[in-house]
Amino acid sequence: MDMLTVLDGGLGRELKEIGAPFSQPLWSAQALMEAPQYVAMAHQRFIDAGAEIIITNAYACVPFHLGDKLYQEQGARLAQLSAEIARTVADDCKNRVQVAGCIPPAMGSYRPDLFDAELAKPIIETLYLAQDKFVDLWIIETLASIKEFHLNHSILSQSSKPGYYAFTLEDTLQDEAKLRSGETVKDAAYELVNCDIQGMLFNCSVPEVIEQAVKDAKSVFKQAGRDDIEIGAYANNFEVIEQDHEANDALQSMRSLTPEEYLNFAKKWKRAGANIIGGCCGIGPKYIQALSDWKRKGAI
Image: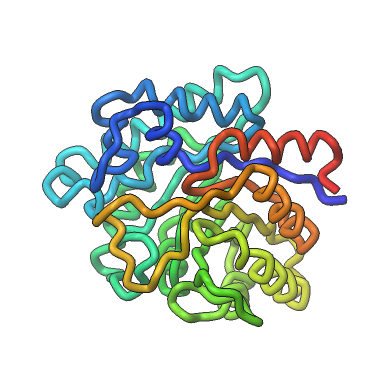
């Protein structure tokens, strides 16, 4: 049986939950700016719940959240601070905890139509350089199209550290899983087989659609002789996200998924071929604790 690695949960909503400064459009960057001790606290809560990998709080260190002026003034510094905090928290743990550098969507989440490679490239390069010294691996998050993957990979391939590419999916059940661009997961997986990557993950989508994505990726990697590519999943606890979603207009509506219900989804992902499982937005420490307890019992 393949081992399971437990990833952390959604840092932004956890910061809000524990009382950190938190509002739109700054999102999770506000805590970095005003009360960074809350960021360390949130990381520690996930580690205490059993997370073996924590992701830096760099998701909102982009112009989309900070605005152009504040990004130019503080974007790189805030991204570096996010990595320094995660590194310190991880190094203070008795158990080995890895730090994943976060590369978020440069032009906004869930909107492949807004992606502009020329504008996105310097933002990704800035976040990469700000965090590289402090992280063990990279997770490029919420990729909505194959074009976004290729730009990120062209930059992250210069790193000697493992790279995991996490794609966000259409929130509708289909015979073939699709990215938010409408491209199929299978087509994306075929692009990945010819690249030097560590893993393909699926994040920030409703949990119902992830099992099919894992199966589709697994079939492509097996056919291509790339069983070395790991597969992972970390869903959100949001209501369905529509194609015209405006991320900074208001906080996304939450659903009432319980840790036990989330664990049942995770078991399906594991059976389908995922060996890295955690949570995204709205998946807090209690959910990660359920995953960790399951792993200790054998993750069957």
